[in-house]
Amino acid sequence: MISRTMQSSVNAKPFIHGPEADAVAAVLVEGQYGHSRETEAFEQELAQYLGVPQVVAVTSGTDALHIALLAAGIRAGDEVIVPSMTFCASVQAILMCGAVPRFAEIDPDTLCVTERTVMEALTPATRAVMPVLYGGRAVDLSGIHDTLAASGIAIVEDAAQAFGSWCGPQRVGARPQATTCFSFGPIKQLTCGQGGAIVPRTEQEGDAARNLRLLGIVQPQSERVRTTTYRVESTGLRAPLSGINAAIGRVQLRHFAATEHRRRSLWRAYQAALLNLGDATLVDVGIDSALPFNCVVRVPRRDAVFQLMHAEGVAVGVHYPPNHLQPAFARWHRDLPTTEQAAREILSLPFHPAMTSTDVVHVVTVLGQALSASRAGERPSRACYEWRSATTDSSTSTSSSAASGRP
Ligand SMILES: Cc1ncc(COP(=O)(O)O)c(C=O)c1O
Image 1 (cartoon, helix red, strand yellow):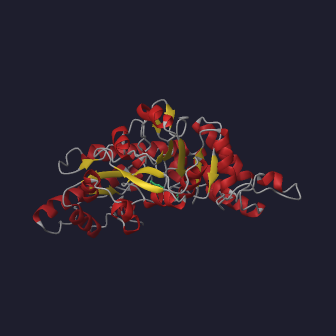
Image 2 (cartoon, protein in one colour):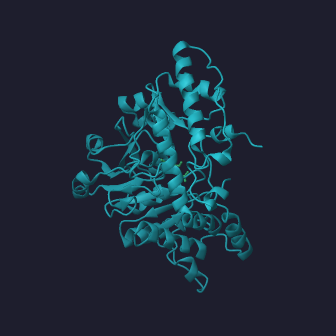
């Protein structure tokens, strides 16, 4: 029997509902592995879920950001405001356009940029702002939309971690002021295996993104197969979402209500369990609106706590080492004391939908012991935690179909 400790021995992993395997097999047999009808059906279903007119599916979240910036008109030498506290993919997407990152500070409670930190980072060369929806938290820049628009500055949201979250009464992705980019990578709220999507602001931006993802060819795949030629009107990338990946995403979307319930329940279980742990401060994801991607705490003596928890088999992580301190991005370094302080303290607890509230109690128990031991400079005593059988703990499970879908 697999030990129950296994659920916290990985920091994150995909959550598969079950029918994904048959859906992939059907595409393999049909033989349409590139951008296909399956991809276009997924795009339509995503648009319906988000309540938007169009979605452009692409190979990854990184490609979504790269293409969205190009479609928004970002070119060589333009400056894009981005938090340093993000996965390096956000910054690489900016550089791949020939543009340059302008790192912005974050709110220490949410690890996201604010209207104030964006305005502080603004320069005459700024052409876009890329808020990163850290952990699934929506970033509301509505108070500066008009100011940015008046200066021709686009908002391209990095919502790689925020599929399924809300911003006020609308889903993230549904606000017309921002172009939104999602990732459907392996451990995201919705996974395609690999994948990503752009929600464009206008039909024109959507057309540009569709051309950019398929080598600048204007005709959609469905038209190309019926003509003797095609037309290349712009430069472009090779970044379609494969029908194989789209098939996984379509199943995931059909079962998404179960995923949403599990992730929110899990985050709330952590919130309750952490209440008595004075030394650990939960990073506020805004759980009433967010569909959480991760669960991050700030702790003193983080590096020691990290090592001590790994020694106990609990797979904590650090998301992220700040980008303005990376060698590749050193040219764009700025003094960002709030980001650097956060980077020394953040610790991502194991978080994925297969975990139960029993797993949460185990993680928080080990965290408490590691905090005590790190204070004393010792190794923690082994967690004397009695596992209950998985079958007796259904506190974060939702339906029998979701439960049977455990990976
Ligand atoms: C904040 C952020 N931006 C961008 C990406 C890139 O997405 P992908 O891995 O699908 O390319 C990720 C993925 O981990 C991410 O977390």
